[in-house]
Amino acid sequence: MRKSLVALIVTMCLSLTACTPLEQSARNTAAALQGGLGAAQTKYQTTCAATPTATACTVITKAIDAQNILVTATEAYCGWSTAAPPVVATATCVPVKSAAAGLQSAVNNATLAITELKGLL
Image (cartoon, rainbow, N blue to C red; front, top):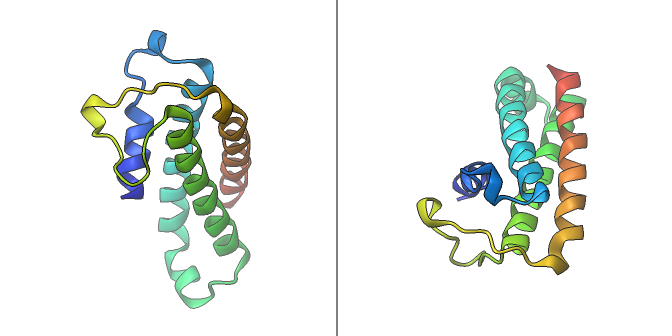
């Protein structure tokens, strides 16, 4: 389900003019984080299976947490229900202004996670 929500975030702003800068930032960050996680998980799969507490594995786990937080913050910001997420093709983000600070914080944390992942690759 999380992968489909990440796909939803990545595709939620098909028309950039319809997105707020914060939504664009969340979308771009989610896409970059997904790519970095995929590469790091592939590279360190054997290492992390053998030694889950290795530094690289800890960085990957923290990045996964950052991704989950970004998805949840986006859901809150867009007014989407976590119990019944919207269908990708019909998703419309209706910004909840009170959730903007939480989404910005999640974007900042995810950006840090991307930087840490780059250090592994």
